[in-house]
Amino acid sequence: MRNFDYQRAGDVAEATALHGNDHSADFIAGGTNLIDMVKLDIMRPERLVDVNRLPLTGIESLDDGRLKIGALVTNTDLAYHERVLADYPVLSEAILTGASTQLRNVATTAGNVMQRTRCPYFRNPARPCNKREPGSGCGALEGINRNHAVLGTSDQCIAVHPSDMCVGMQALGATLTIEGPGGTRDIPFEDYHLLPGDTPEREHDLNDGELITHVTLDAPIDGARGHYLKLRDRMSYEFALASCAAVVALDGDAIREARIALGGVGTKPWRSHEAEAALSGQPATEETFQKAAEAAMAGAVAHRDNAFKIPLAKQAIVRALATVTAQS
Image 1 (cartoon, one colour):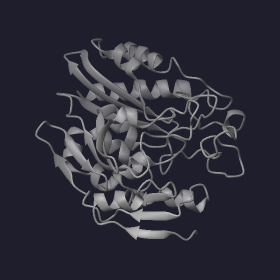
Image 2 (cartoon, helix red, strand yellow; image 1 turned 45 degrees about the vertical axis):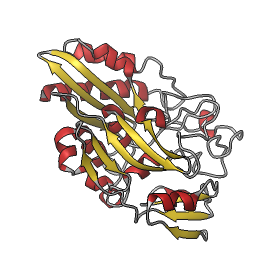
Image 3 (tube, one colour; image 1 turned 135 degrees about the vertical axis):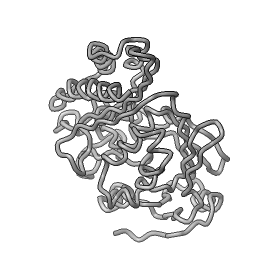
């Protein structure tokens, strides 16, 4: 392990001041992703600012119906919170399909939002990776790319985003509150993670020294039900090959409103507005679900080993919709 200049912060202002605009500094909370990256010699911080003492462990129901979640709320506490179970079950299901119980007990909400890809070319310093070393090339493009993305890719990067929790949040709608040397700002969750484009090294809309302090979920859609379906190689401790978070509200047999987000197939947690448009006002039938699935994956681009993800994602969408509408 590397040696670090290790500092503890007592409040948010002190944390951001200790970090400053130092490119060699990182915040650490649960550390379930950061420490892995350090061990692999991919992330090389010289200074770590410990934020575990910050008062960001609360979950608060707001007067407008939204739910404000502290950055340091653990995945376990969030998944089993009574308000999440009652009003945002798709989020609870998404969290509980990810990682292991031990990891969920220490992994934090903001840490999950910040986690980095598990692309093996990114994680192997001996292989080319534009995300890790801009301009070096993308080993996955001509390499083994079975687990890689088919949505939001570029000729610079096809790394898939790993989070389950973020897919649930993408479907629900949320806002990230950020605090840093320049003050406080809010970012819509859908805008936070960036597409690789020509700058795959830029993964999110966060500046040096800025810290996520809260995630605030939109008020639940009246009468909506949610479901998270994750398709993977094994049932435990495995990343998604394709997943779907579906939130649907019905008026009789017609779909009044729908939210669809996908995991395992996108370079970021993927919100499918195309699928939502195909569902709006339509009968809750398998034919409708199939049309929505086709719309969601119309822009997918497959590579040598991952073409199977396109029909698999369509199946995930149809099955998730069938499940959530059957509950209504």
